[in-house]
Length: 386
Image (cartoon, rainbow, N blue to C red; front, side, top):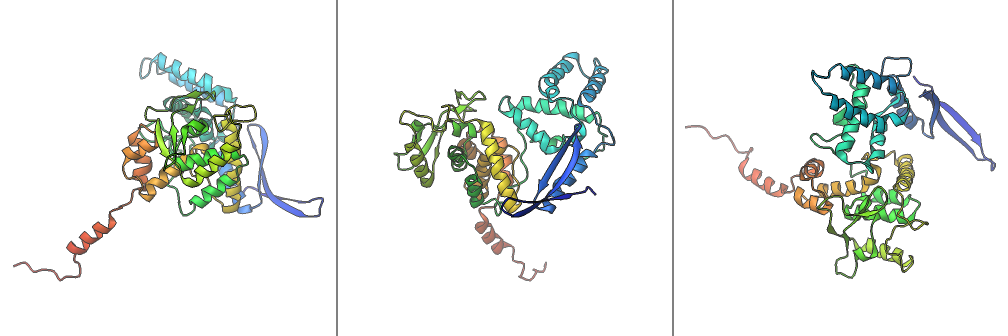
């Protein structure tokens, strides 16, 4: 059993405090994690210990050495089951996206680490290419993993939707725990008011973070009886204005009256000549990394207070995902085409599997109940056959 230690201290005011901590060595460096709650820390410690021992090796397993072993295996198959161009493509992916990580110890890689690795690439690369990076990395990792090993952090079905390049989210959202009130509280822990409003816009409309960040005064239609956001642009990875992500991306999405009032108050605080709402002190669009950092801070507050984990791997996309899931859960949308139009998504099958099918209820339950009460009369005696 890994040994968890306790650290106690006394502040200048005489107030005493304590925390539990655990130290471990990975990639040749000592690391430490801590928590005020011992049970919470034990869960994380168990994950680390399991990962450090998931390969039967007492010494570090080199990424570079494993890659060399994999290329040797692949070269032996040239002309039999694969061609040389396939290897060149994989090596190019490795050289550009995996090798720059350094000669890390493969034993220390966790499923969360894999998700974070892919997420960091997401704003630069398209989904199909991200999937190719994932599988090259998986093949290199699998060189050192027995076929029967079930706890690999690269099990494809744990990360990707079958038949799609889309990164898989976690299980269904528990809306009893992740209620609107919890989402509201989570956003309240975000320190920056503009970033709070970006996240609120994502919740309210189901828009993408890149679409919310590109919001301008002229695209907010508040003089209409029903206020709405006219989505016409998004931001690219260089923080430049571009067209929406998909051909279905241009759409009008309704905004609640409460959020409209909050946005108007915020816009009134901006310089009159500033059209785009969410700019930093250098008059540039707010950086995605800053948004992620502030959200991580807020998620930690929620975790510490309620022991509540994020329900999706792509952190800043969690609000869009929560809203799409809630719409399906509440029965607001029971048709994947209509929901896809609202989300600006062209992949109808993905929307159906990810939201409609996952949260599908029989919203026609009263009529079904009436039908069964009429025809399935179990209390009636059986009729005898003549």
